[in-house]
Amino acid sequence: MTAETKRLITAIGCKNKQAILLGTDGDLLKPQATLEASLITVAEQINNSGADELLILDLSENDEEHEAVIGSIKETARVIDLPILVGGRVKRMEDVKKYLYAGAKAVFLDADKPENVDLIREVSNRFGAEKIFMMVSDEKALARAEEFAQLGVSMLILNGTVAESADAGKAENLPALAVCTKTAETETVYHVLHADHCEGVILTAIEADKTNKEISYMELKQELSKKGCPMDILTSSVPWSDFKLGPNGLIPVIVQDFKTDEVLMLAYMNEQAFEDTLKTGKMHYYSRSRQTQWMKGETSGHLQYVKSLKLDCDNDTILAKVHQIGPACHTGSHNCFFQTLAEKDYKETNPLKVFEDVYAVIKDRKIHPKEGSYTNYLFDKGIDKILKKVGEECTEIVIAAKNPDPEEIKYEISDFLYHAMVLMVQKGVTWEEITEELANR
Image (tube, rainbow, N blue to C red; front, side):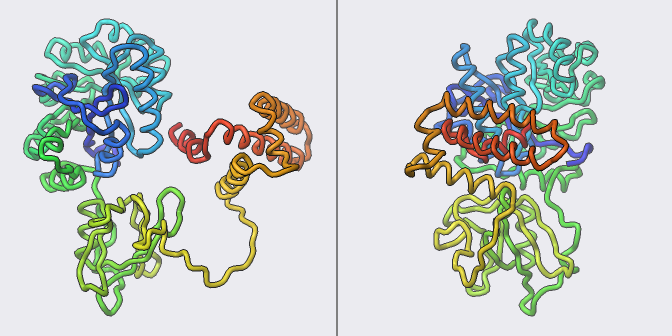
């Protein structure tokens, strides 16, 4: 996404881990209805439907509920790829810190709350102005835009009666995101986005609940792009006419999991399937046996959401990286390549694969103890013994680092990582969670 690209942001409320629809009377801060689904479930749907960012409004009413929402935000940040904006219950700097540490890219304050305005300079100095937004819901608050900018706000969120004021000149000191509760009205969304100072629109997806039909933000962005709004959409850098096709007019597509690089399947596309894939963000193929186009997961629900499409050096094969829902193979296997034809023993050196394999052995030892196993000895002794060993290995690393021979520190770091994995298994923490946490940072 470039700096000029307009953003399409979807907003959802959260209380007691449940997702809540927002936007009563055009006000983002007013809840409309509690959904049966959890925040994480709805966030995943939004993530897969083509939105650019997710806004979460914390609707908790006490500290206990507040901590539960923060927990939900952490879990959500681990499973979606979208940047997250969070706000709603900010009473002190610690609340801003918790939101950011939970995975938010920025926190929005409320101009109607004097204690929030008083916090601006403190939190901006601590975390950076780029992480502090301000929501304004009336003309009086909007008139203070210059003051907010000087205190350390980097972005306005225009809500309620001022949601379409981005082109009125009052927000010229700050870029703005504007709330639009009429998600299904492309003309209204276009009007809001077309304003000079508006960098994005915040949609509430109310219509999706009323019609019980999924809104495709990817298709909405395609429509807005046709009207002249620069949107983050899938466009091919190479025209179909430059592809080298087979005698049947098809091109093979190798499909990989975007996180693990696991090869999932091989399929074929014709031109229409390729265009529909770009338009919807969902993988479409052409069946050679049925002589018809099909969307992956249309009947099974095992959809594939596009992350990237690449063309090989000969222009005759596409590599698609996707977010796979469920198994990729019609047999129920996660991938289609499960029949081993021939194999030679080799040492696995892929770093993450090695970590996962060692972790799996340690986990298996915990479930199925083996007599004489040092790993089982640690589990039998309990958490205090494990922590003691982790601490000892940390000290060994420090000592080894003083040795000019790098071999010693390799040995000690390996020892530390083993004991850290024992601790991870003991606490039920996985490598996927660790890598997600690192990626969020």
